[in-house]
Image (cartoon, rainbow, N blue to C red):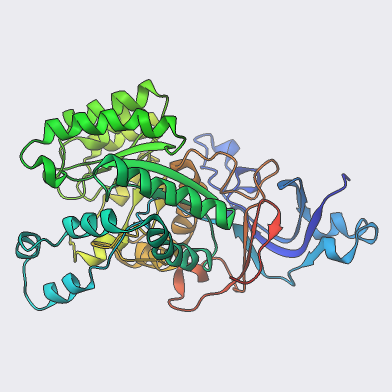
Length: 425
């Protein structure tokens, strides 16, 4: 057996790896009937870690005889606790300025969203606050939200721009996202979302604004600030043809695309993402079965966002059964943002996915690990599998379903990032 930098022993693993039976479909051939193993779980197991990667996974019995050659500091005995891949929050807007709890309060007192917007509220309020914030202030505000997520087992996160709607502020947001990843040494995927809303300076000139969005993208990409490109394709935002222009620039730069689509209506956003073989299409309450088939063909992940559904008191459920039927991978995320999902708990998002959308505990945990990784194009994360990054979360739970079942009790015992245990956050 190879020499490891670190060994974790006496663990129960939810691997989410096909090597251990996760997601194996029943064969049409009755002679080759194979049942999947929930969570790809492996009990009484151990993990060997080398150079920040998972180098070996096996049973406790296989490693016991080799333990005497290791120093005590190289061994973590987790005493039967559960380990999952580190959680991945694959759709967030955590970098923003200001606070919109005043709007939340006003809506509960009967003030309409239209009246709030007319008074300078809504996304314009966040844009104004984000533009006004210094980079230090924006970092300090956003850091709190990141730490809340990390305390619940998150080891990778996506952070979008989109509250600047001008070049300087979009740059500022993406810079803060990079700085957060550097300070906390976790993976941050940065997403350019200037096509989020119409900039106030371009009122009634959406095509002119999209032209600017297309011009800014190569500039920010050249500065190393952009990992992927997103947009809001909706009847209150941008058309498929306008988003297509942005996607064409992304394609020219070899940047992957994703999209906010089918949240309020069906105007073909997911079909557009599928055409560009995009990483994900997100929200999807109004997604048609025809476009689900296109997503399946392009291996585009469906990112489900129950926090926004809950906050908006929506009643139109995403087409979960049709997504299952066509084997579209489903990820789940907080959609942390100041207006429609001020949520900094991925565990609560998982519970909402089960309670509101009738997803199973296995589906939401897979959606926060292996499929969330796929939604970010991270093939080396989201699984406990040889060759993957040693990004892990340790939980004091009786079974994996507890993570979606419990509300308000944080069972996280620690996280490992790139093979290094983190101190208590």
